[in-house]
Length: 239
Length: 239
DNA sequence: CGGGCCATTGACATCCATCAAAGCGTGTGG
DNA sequence: CCACACGCTTTGATGGATGTCAATGGCCCG
Image 1 (tube, rainbow over the protein chains, first blue to last red):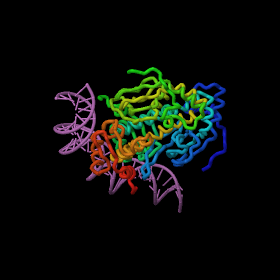
Image 2: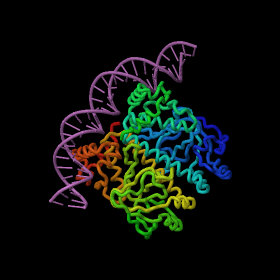
Image 3: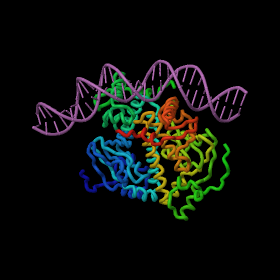
């Protein structure tokens, strides 16, 4: 609820710059890009950043925390379409119809940079590196979703789970966290929704991995003991 | 194989303009946008427009015909990620890594407009309507994939099939074709790959719809007899 | 006219969902 | 600060939807 007043907002000295901003900018351009972020917003766990149907005005770059995005069908079913973490951009789905097409919900206390899309459009006409970056961010999202389609369309439960865990630690590791330890910020049900499985199947699959000595699971704390085994599950050698 | 020499290529008098180009352009801008399309390319059935791993240089707008796009995992499995028809844009996945991330294969003899992405970038810095259009096309693709995720993650075979058929005729109808008759340009196996099902399941589901009087199927010729029934299958009323 | 690809259908197997019950943690309020 | 309650997770038993394997048939194209 509490939106803090405008504070020091400068991409040029943000330590996430390399994650969410273009590389190799001239100092002059860097200064201009600082003007992109209007302000920041803090969210508590379970708070919603935007809802399906909300008017689209801005993109959001995650500074801290973790989010899920989800879509819903006309009847009640919903589908988690992704989990986002620091440096990742949310809201691209809203551009086409000027309304958001999904919900974005904080899975822990989080903070986002609010980037009015008007400014992105105006500035990217003048700074080619920014223009290119915007195109790449959108293209990356398309490629990411292609991968999830492959997962949902052709993998079995254990393969989906293994792919999910590997993807998660890989992204965490890119942000300076451990390559093997994860705190799962989402419930079994949310993982299940993302992977097209039921929560019981997620639980059983994790138990199986644990019995096989591939991971150690204590509630939301997960340690990967044998990453190569996970890799083999995703990509069975003899095919 | 045969790439025709550069011919009359002008978006301004293409009857697909409203499908793949921005609306409401000034005559001056229209003229400039004519320069976007470098040339066209004809493809025979089964021919590949681009492969996963190919260097990305251009987007492709479909003039005539139908394509499928597919991704593959390291082991042999592949997944059809979409079926594209006249006016739709392919190749957006290639922007992020400067290499294509999927294959695009013609399902019938087809023709595409080749749009060098460099030109898109250059011109969209100067023509805001084009810039906006590019963003919308990419955002639309993200939203489309969100819908497929929902389908793959939470729907059962009959629901997926019904959603697929409705989506197909809706797009065909927008292009001036019948609202009820379709010629399926893809095999049962390709439909199955797209919907995360096996070809036998596609065949059985179509047979079931046929028994129920919802569709009439003669090989690749399909006629929808009761679109509302399909709609009810996608969105069961009591939920 | 023949061959190969595509489609259909049946019988059976498997994976995952469903239903149910109990245990564990966390956080909140007294 | 403790106790309780609720939400989350685990595990078992069972069932159902879809996959798998197999055989046949039809259509289209060369």
